[in-house]
Figure 1 (cartoon, rainbow, N blue to C red):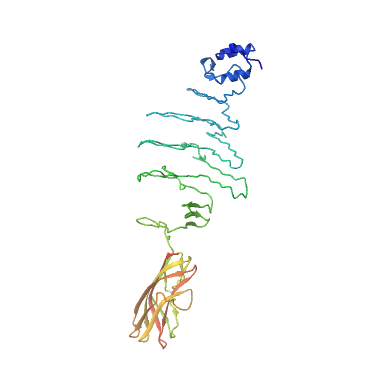
Figure 2: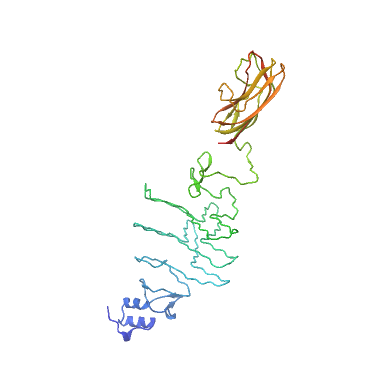
Amino acid sequence: MLSIKKQLEPKSFKEIEIHKSAGILDDFAIRKDIQTRTITAENIINNQFVPYTGATSDVDLGSNGLTTTGNIRSDGGFSFNKLPNTRTAMSASLTSGFISSATGFHLTLTGSGDYANCYGFQNNFNISGAGASGYGYYNAVSSSGVNTNQSIYGVANIMNPHSPGVTNYGEFIQSQNTTLNNPSVNQIGLYIDWKNEGTDSNMKRWAIYNAGTLNTASKVFLGKDNVKTYWGTGNDLEIYHDGTNSIIKNNTGQLSIDTTDMVFTTSGSGLPYGSCWGNEIAWTQASAAQNTWYNISDADMTDGQLNLVTHDGSGKLTIAKAGRYLINYSASCESSDPNIHLEVGIEITGSGSAINDGRQHVITFTANEQYALSSTAIISLAANDTIEIAVRTTDTGTPNLSVDHLNITIIQIGG
């Protein structure tokens, strides 16, 4: 390297070229000198800064910054690859007053032609090493003062697609774990850590908010079965579709629905329910034995309203889902003998006797006189259990028992 004489040190970029041609300065000294010099008009060619004539290699600014009130153009992009690097790769300090605007980073991107790929911002991010952490994109936005008209966006993405058959993503996140079977690796597509430090009860806070109108049924789309959304600090509530059914599972406390009215809009929907009825069915059991239960089964029984409950056409209802059911029934009964103790009750799954819940009785003071008997009960039932109404006499003798009218209603009220 040639020595640099102090009395010959250049004072302008024009002098750099003169001294360089005279062999007084080498390229290193030129680049070193550029670090402390101010860009002047003689170094602006076609509105671009040229550090020195014929410059083809990198210009090292060292720890010095580059300040300009104009634009910086880089046809080859910007590269920051010096390690270790404790400095910010690119930063902008903006001061904006009243009725003014400022842009930290502005990118105008135009793509045309078939199969054109355009990326407004592409970040290839690779972290390694124990305890290493990093952010592919980090945005810290704060607001101070009181301004009722203030709007702040961490990320704003405005799309205006025109071509048919084009899929547009406001934000696309693909998380791929190449470290297989590693329980210490957690992947989160979108993580929201909302800290509310305000006390204004009128302030609205939404983690995800859609203010637009979508001409599609998909507002939030999870395109896989058994993908669960969890709510609460301890997975208190989970919602998912298992491929056949939609499931809302409340794991903590009670599930409350705070509404004025609840309406099922699909015909035949809602909680499991069923009913059947028969008028003038003239069902008869001849020579009824003492303490023997007889099911009231008659082909003149008619289907009522059925949802997840089936009717065999003769007065037997079968439930499809387990749970606790409210059962109501009424029957008009008579005996061919007077002074007979008649009992009516609910029989479950052909057990041969009526359960204790919901039993009703009457004493027939005269023969062949009809008596209206009705009752209600809440019963725990298993899937595919059946419900029938049964009648018996507890007295000696063998009277003929008959039923002319029968109504049965069942509805699930709990699990």
